Length: 211
Image (cartoon, rainbow, N blue to C red):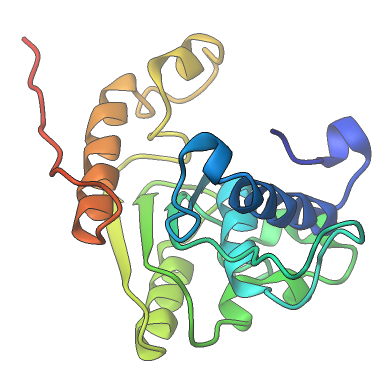
């Protein structure tokens, strides 16, 4: 599955969110076919993908595709957000505001949080030039005040792409050296540990140290 983006489809972030919601509905509707528990669907994403995963959990009553069966919930049961855009306004994502055509606040998760946010894990590099630590901390405070589980794990000095698989960096040699493939394993250790603690996987993760 993929979601529509401006460069390939001329889409806006609103269509991207609709696609994320459609994908979650599709998986929930086909859960039995794939041996999936429809009550334990986790939405994960990085950067813009993290934004639309979060938006699917926050905007439960809008930004739906007209052909979707809205009787099926599009809210995920847990969220894994890597370098997420939690504030799409000038206070959180100044460089991206033009993408929203003057409607940035309308699609800004931190401005629309309400009770019912699923358990959420955020991974963020403290050297991220696009996602401010302040915006993520503000999001966490708001989520916790509403009774949600919201854990933030910081990767010191890392920038925007730190969590990716080594192959990602092989294809993008222009990325900064601090975004190294060594962060992939600890990132997913943190993710597995969170999912275990929230009851989504049966066994705790094991860290393997290679020479």
